[in-house]
Image (tube, rainbow, N blue to C red; front, side):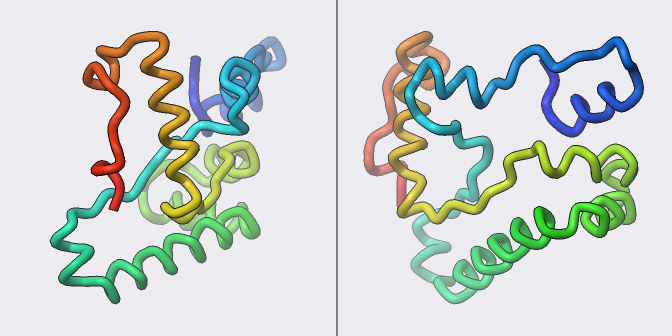
Length: 138
């Protein structure tokens, strides 16, 4: 099982390769939840309290960045290559399949809790034995 952009890279290099499983679709069919959260920005309570404007600036830039990458995959691929992350030829075709979204924390909590509950139903130890409570969220 490979994540993007490696799936796109392999599909582009081999006519024999095929995508046989969409993990997001599988998660949806098993859990009833549209998609699972793949990344999160974590800050401490003290950072939130002491630097609210900085956090607001970071979140705004993050949201704008996600929108820009989705709207400009070629330019984003070039920027990814320039930053030394990976070749544009690998990054660019994968961007439309990466499901890049920005979801504010106020809207993401239910999806995150559903994901933890889903993981807990298979292996409680995988998430520390219990579904995190409200104290996880700022």
